[in-house]
Length: 323
Image (cartoon, rainbow, N blue to C red; front, side):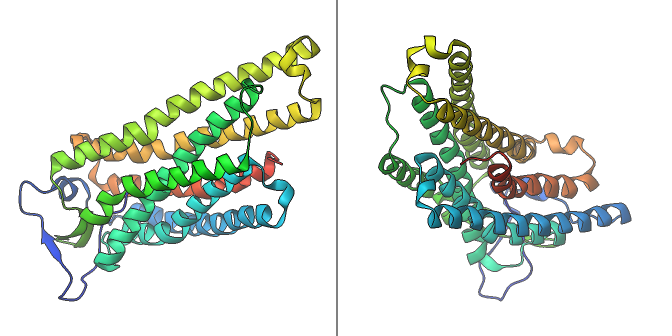
């Protein structure tokens, strides 16, 4: 999800992308930084927005982790998942946001080959962890609320699931760690994949399907079921055996958690969709129908929305009172 770099020392490996088998569509569709006055003003506006998101995301996610760590009563299975989500968001804000904002603004990658690989890898890992954690939470909520006699929440199970989530995420992001390299462009160096155009199309398609569409389908199904169960329990009251077995205060807390998590999922879907669409349009050639001057600003907006998503989750937890 990142893209370019300044001249580094002569020992840095730089790949010239004149070969037709390389991902030369980046050169076609990722133009130089904006030069018009309006575009430059908008670029500086995005810099300010990136700084705001960085400060809020850093402080908010640290507070989420600290609050659960200090208060044993808050260490429920759901909150353990939320802490894992906060850790992933922290990685995004700390390691991925600064270099991405810099490359979007300056129009090239300026941190060298090692950071090119690390930043891209960590960003993919954190995104994968976020979406898989949200999916795991949705399934856990569905089972806890709709199948209370068959499912028992435990923090041990939550920690095991989190371990599996990290293992899958670390493994699936390896292609970026191995394949990212620096490509020479007229306006500087770009951090891009070294594989072919066709391989990058397949790579983006697989990520879009397995780490966006499929999780959203699962989360939509589970939360629709949760909403139906909560509505049914509220309307049937003591006439329903499952509802009668759950204290009213606990049922109200479940409803609050369900509402909060649905908002978190909706924001994830909305904030990441523009970036996925941007890359899909790029590899399919549809970006050529958009004004070339607008492309850097669209890239900044797509990236900013992802980082906004990482910073806004703690705000949602606070205002919607998870615990």
